[in-house]
Length: 227
Image 1 (cartoon, one colour):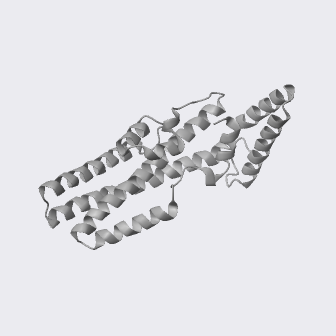
Image 2 (cartoon, rainbow, N blue to C red):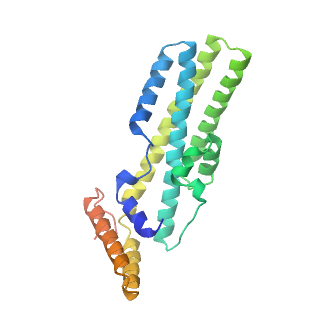
Image 3 (tube, rainbow, N blue to C red):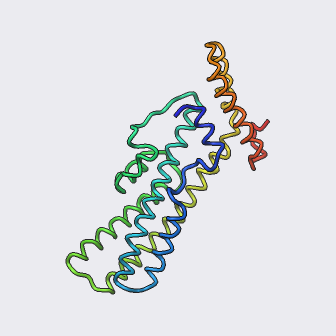
């Protein structure tokens, strides 16, 4: 991904990392709550399985946030950054939960990251413990206890996720005002013009227009670099 593409992403909140399918995720969470409320064997089991899937989506979103934030930060300083193609974008969707947590652990830092990863690992352990007890035999009371333990961790995870998601979103909102973008754009336009590459000139001029539009529409009006 080049810098011009990064600019288009940063100025468009619809292109920031988000749920793969918002409506489906909301439906899944609703079904999970209803399942838990039934106070039955299949209800508790369904709750744990569905909310575990939801937690994977949260981790996936934060990992994509971390990768984008790092790429943006490096681009602003004139550096590039490459990752294994199987560890970015849609390719992350097929990764196992433990692998996603490891990747997140070794990515960009954000408030609450260490606790969030610990909570996710504890949730995973609870789910695995439940799976093992199903094989050996488990009573409804014990299952209810495990589901309640899992629910408490889910609630903490949701709070941690919302805080982190808001932190990244604020970063994108702020970073569009950095004047280094203007320097990078002007340098690329001059370079493309010198090489008589009209198509590239137009591409960078379009990126500049989109950046200025994003700044104009921004709700942040007191940023030091604002024109």
